[in-house]
Image (cartoon, rainbow, N blue to C red; front, side, top):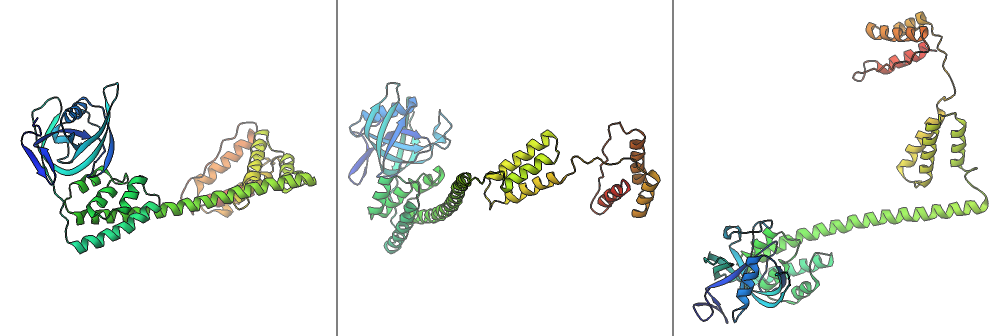
Length: 383
């Protein structure tokens, strides 16, 4: 690797070697001037950090890899634009990994890799910012700052220290890079911002992103507010119901004289089978817990009333008059010989062998073919 005493690249008051160690990053983009903590665990990456620390200036190239799932990454799997950064602090971990704090310095385009096998060594060229027209840049900066303030106020995903720095800076390029570190941006979006040298274009991109995020966060807050109001109302109704129960108990007005108590009495007197009665009483218990304004109140109450109204103890007289049944079916329906013959056959078998387990007749067909009217005729024929 070329040292700083050999060929260097000058950029302002900094001079970089022609080649620097490179660390591929997973799901992370480091922007110029930002201080970022990084965990380094792969052998090649740790070797690259060690090589950088061996130099007078601890410079390293940081570039994101295209697929974060790949462990043994190849040069063609690393984005071509990254950042030259300086290692500010290094903490070595006993397991061989390292924790580093780096400060981004400048955008660079990677032009090639050396044959070093222990770690990646990259050749690069510095990408200078293109400031653009001053008035347009200033107007965009003010607009984006206003959107950013709204974004932070609405609870956008931004570290507090970065938010404070972004609000106080008047440097458009630095402001765009600060906002670009938001976790709400995808890796591809952040990489696109890193690869864009035009400050004006970066501000335009950030403006669209913040406007969309503000709309999403606004809708999110509205939904959360509506949900909270519903929860508050439900909780208030529950407390009031519990208080009402306590008052009724003190007054001696318990369930025995209440509407629900009357329902329970009707269920007990209906003569239902034990399994059905247990299910019906369970529905009444549910009815007691559900708020009066809930749509379920009407559904459950209708269901319980219907169960109570069924003639559980009444037995039908099955001494059927087959000729009369045939006459009624013929009067009510023209044609349908096969269906009417099947009904008469069913009734005749039931009359001759009442102790046999009765099968079920199922009418199938589209609307309007007479299923319901046949049922009514059968009921009339059976008395």
